[in-house]
Image 1: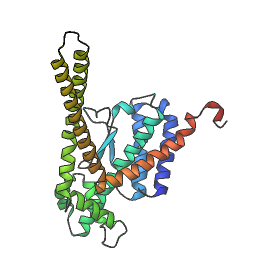
Image 2 (image 1 turned 60 degrees about the vertical axis):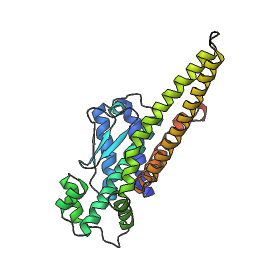
Image 3 (image 1 turned 45 degrees about the vertical axis):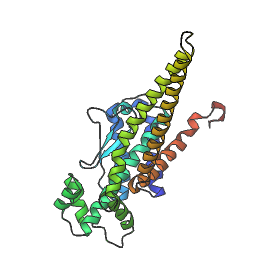
Image 4 (image 1 turned 180 degrees about the vertical axis):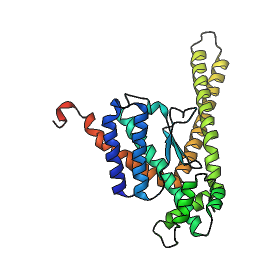
Length: 275
């Protein structure tokens, strides 16, 4: 999927879907998105994951995510239901789907690697919690030899997820939620402290001591926010640096840019658009 030809082919298919999007029903949009995933996966030689609309739906800021044990990519239903999706939203959705499909390819490479090391389909299922028998059986039929071009990628993914990097990876992933929650809490505290300081500073009945205390509280909350922000950004950078994420973000971003570039003429002033 990282090949430029694969990204271009995917971007062409997605651009055609963008033109048709307003006239399609939500289930037809999902079917066309699935066709794009099928093409990308089949071109790369692995079983395409199924697109699904989970219940409850994904958070509005999450466009999609791979559920690799079931071999499904959960898609944000708010987007597939949206008739007036913007070009920016569509480009982001395109990149997200390609990113998550690339994750599926990574897990398939790991399964093929395990098959080459002598694992059975059942062992691969138990080791990876990979519950789709089509995927495990296909991996057994196509083991990844040590001298195969994709072996280096498979080794890097395996080491990160299951090997020497697993403990560090798990710590990085487990810190994302708490870091975001702490940042949200610090932001709310800073907002309250700022409003409180402004209120007291304008209060003619407030004493100098009260104003000083309110200012000190605001500055303390400001520092708490800066600390939480730095920790959240550092944690996110560590997540993006994980081998499987760096790889998926690189390919997904290329797909997003390729789609956005094809849609760019729509945003030009009318007098600059081709007739």
